[in-house]
Image 1 (cartoon, rainbow, N blue to C red):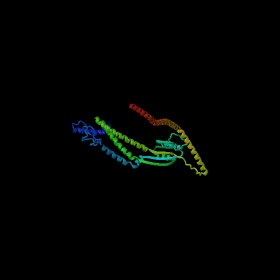
Image 2: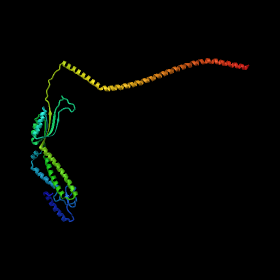
Image 3: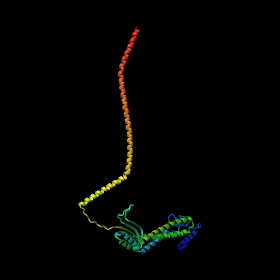
Length: 377
């Protein structure tokens, strides 16, 4: 890169290199190296500890440049009046709420007014005021609403706000003015410093032949360029906000209140209303009961079937149990009768056996007597 600024920077560098070559014949050349303390480039074999640097000669010194730009900024700011800065960097914003009886007409008028004054819509939101459910009710009462954030050229800001306020009943209006002149001035000064620093890094990068130091310079240059881009983005945003003011507009639909005449009911009217309400309530009750029965019939049938089966099983088991118990009772009764008969028979047999035993004993005695008589003879 061969330009005027580079030529101005290279002349002192060449002179310094010649002086260093005369003092030290062993030195092969002068190179640039970045120290750990900041943007300081020293000579002599890429040593960070070298006592000589271009900073000592007043070249490539960020501190000197910062002081120069600060002094320049002070001179420029002193030459500018405070009123000029305030008028050039003011950001206007307004929040308005308007009620209207004719919503559609007011909304169309608002958009026509916005177009007439050269504004545009950043975002908007419309609601018909209906319920959020999926059912449509023809007689549902709805209250429409509209809100939007619009940008208006600052020269038309007051005229647009006045026209928007006349679209209906202006319920509230809040205005705000923010002065960004000081911030913009600081950003401008910072941008000049970084741009000058960028040019120095580009000039250094053109002269460096070592890849290692070229990578370091490129990294620093990239960081500086990113900072420059961020500063420019903010400055453009401020310029846009100054050129186009903010208006937060809300439009609500309202309806005119109509008072109804007060009516005094007589006794017969109240009695008729009570009977009518009672009849209506009773019909509603019967209707609900009918629908309840229809709804619960399948469940009642299912429950009835289950209960019938359970009762049937229980009765069957109970009948079997009763039959078994009856059979056991009959068996016990039969056994008791047999036992009674046996006992009676046993008792009768015991009474007859002593009488039969006595004649037998008599016969035995007579036999023994005859036997003994025979023996005697």
